[in-house]
Image (cartoon, rainbow, N blue to C red; front, side, top):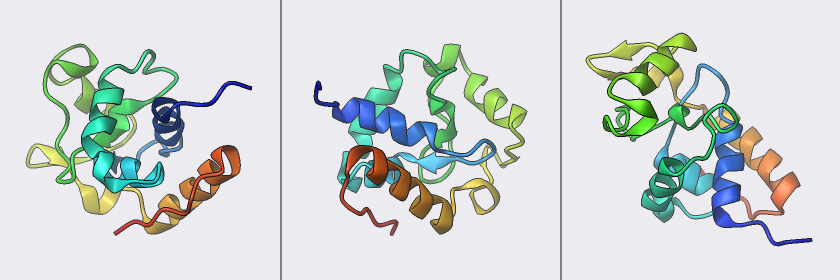
Length: 125
């Protein structure tokens, strides 16, 4: 069986973000075992081959801001996709208190990834 890549693991983690919720790049990096890989997560998601399969629009920066206009087909597309899922914005960014993944979400996502990938436990700071 071919070894799964870190990029594939990142895509698997992003697919676990519930509809109507968002995660930060650092949270996705922590899910795959190293919070310091947040920039790598961003680079991988920028190359996402299929947003319909891997909803990378659900990943925002730690303050809830969307990606720049180059992503998702143009300025405002990520925001529109999130709003279509019921995500509320406040002063130009996601209302993180309402829509960021919770510790329970994170723990459940870790358990799912561990079952599929055999990953080490990750911790949400």
